[in-house]
Image (cartoon, rainbow, N blue to C red; front, side, top):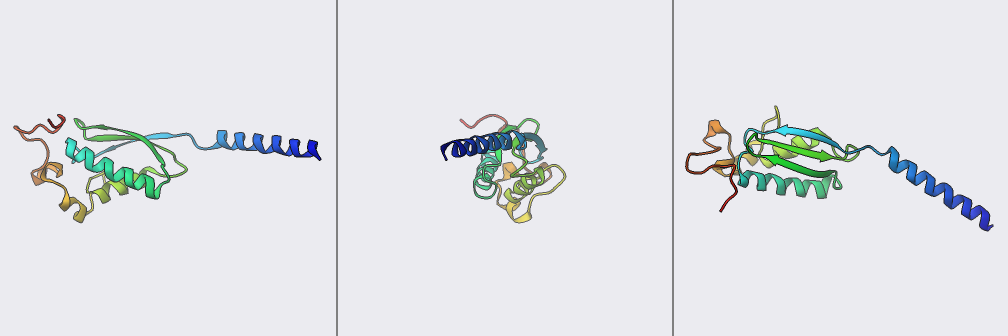
Length: 135
């Protein structure tokens, strides 16, 4: 009886290790946003993405890097849990444009003026550079 049990345990362990190897590897996506230019915007978007990641995607986003000078966010994600389109929709729901998709109007209205599109008076101003951290 013991040899059968041991053989079964070995087979289960081998199956689990093969399943982990076969799981999708993490991928990166870069998303441009015309209204992601300041530290306030960065904080608002990252807080929203953290919430979405935890509640809806089972931590499918692994990490991200925000470049305020170019208005981009680069996200590493698990394709088994989340897609780039899901991430774009979440950004839109937070009030931010994502590549070619526009922000949800109600969410966009709630953003501070600095986080609005340039045509709406948002973005960097001479006395308030957006890419520098707040003091």
